[in-house]
Length: 261
Image (cartoon, rainbow, N blue to C red; front, side, top):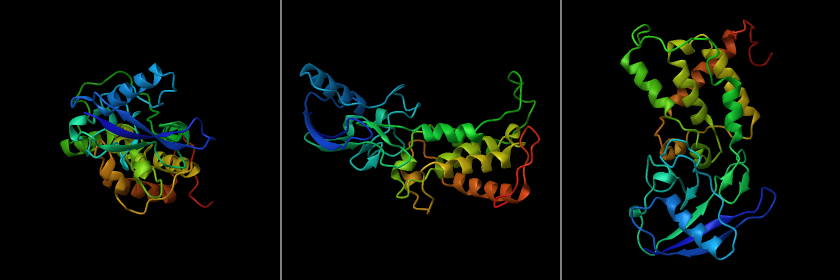
């Protein structure tokens, strides 16, 4: 299989970028999209040229680091699939493919297809955790959790923080990511004491970054490789509204003032 790749090349965050065309041959149907980039980079290195920079780690659809826009769609045309799990059998010989990084102000380009997603880390640091000491893993039946609640929490916990939701949103919003984190912690008993404080802290951290607001386009849900539901956004909004009037306490006992005071 032969392909014509148009890849975004940008030397640094302050440099101007552009698409560069690369013909690539010897592609097998069983290859993943990242393996195609590996083949391209081997060719570039062999010619003494700078290889294309892109992120990857597990290559199993778990870590979320391989995010890129393929033919205008975050992670490519296959729903519920990361770029590293997108295989070439879904393309045809001679296809023209455009590859570019996430396009979001909150994710500045580092180089080529690599963007800085540390804004997500700062949001999680603001409240995406449970501070109570729970000790070692308890016996499974010591805290009974209904199956529906457990399933919803696990569905939300599947979020891998890849940033596809932000890249696909016309506003560059991160509410699906934040909603998933708030949902999977807030549904479980261990997350209840800090539930409202967590919602307020994470939303305020999100607003402090360069993310846009949600206007319910649902593009985030459409491209999420783990198919996170926008119902998590509804839960985020409910918890944040409650936090704005309930003056929730942190684990430290400090009372939060309502928004606007």
